[in-house]
Length: 374
Ligand SMILES: Nc1nc2c(ncn2[C@@H]2O[C@H](COP(=O)(O)OP(=O)(O)OP(=O)(O)O)[C@@H](O)[C@H]2O)c(=O)[nH]1
Image 1: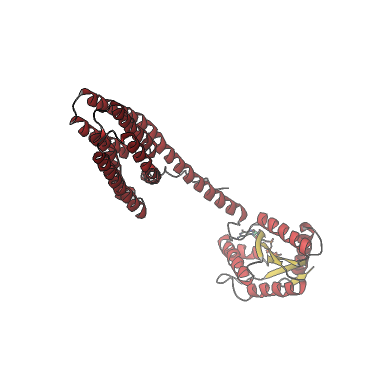
Image 2: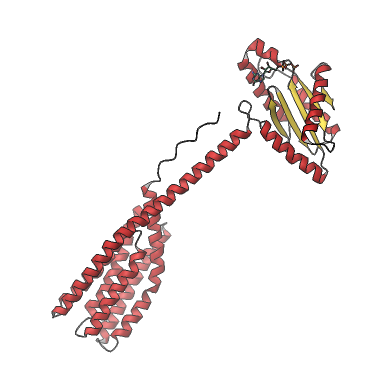
């Protein structure tokens, strides 16, 4: 009977999904930050000659400083392994600094030029829109960026006269509010996707482990831990193919414990089982790693000696026989083994096994505890 599949593992930790989401966000931000100088160029181009040069230079200096601080924070986060618990506030700080120096573009450059004001408002909307997918796996960090951007912009607008400035502040607030609202839904689905990927990966590992365990079970004899008959058939087919292709010699031993029924009858089946297990271990201890020892059925075993001609195989078989006869396999139970040997002669597996079986039968008839080559 095959063992039932283990129950599926519990879903992966939410912490793990959040950690992956955080790592993705840090990497995305590291990439996007490289494009910031493009934004400076656009702003400088639009404001050139329209605002006092000192203001433009002050904003560029502020932007470059904020940018360098954010880059430094990101580099530290990456160097220390992007740990969510330790670094999430650092990332929030980097985003807020980013938002603040962008927002300062209004404070330093907006004024009476309506076209420039509109351009700067559009730039801030663009900055928020570009950053939305960057922070989609850490939406709260995006809120920090938007809040810092809007508050800094508002501070600059409030000190200017006229309603137009408040209109820009309101328009920006509506745009950022809507963007955050829609990104919230997207962000939830993205993190859910990461969770599903983790669950799938965990399930795949679990299934392949269960499959490997089942394959092992299907190929192994439960009592002795040796390969079973099914596995022997496969090993024998492979060895015969090798023998045919490369002319490698192959010898097959069929071993059968002598008068094993008497062990069961005298000591009980439990002791009989222990004898079979001890026999398997003793035989295996005598073999090379390339040899195959399988339980053929009952108290019968088959050994494949690859690359071994008949003379050497007889020696090996006799060594096995002596190892069994040398001392009791379990305390108080002495037993011997008879061995039939057949060396491959361009025949198929069934014929080779039949020859070894006939040799084993001859060994039994000859008095047991002996090796006969067929
Ligand atoms: N304990 C135990 N006994 C087994 C197992 N498989 C087969 N047997 C027993 O092995 C015994 C084989 O007996 P026989 O075929 O008569 O052979 P034998 O007594 O070894 O005699 P010879 O082979 O002629 O020397 C039977 O009593 C089976 O019940 C097993 O997994 N555990």
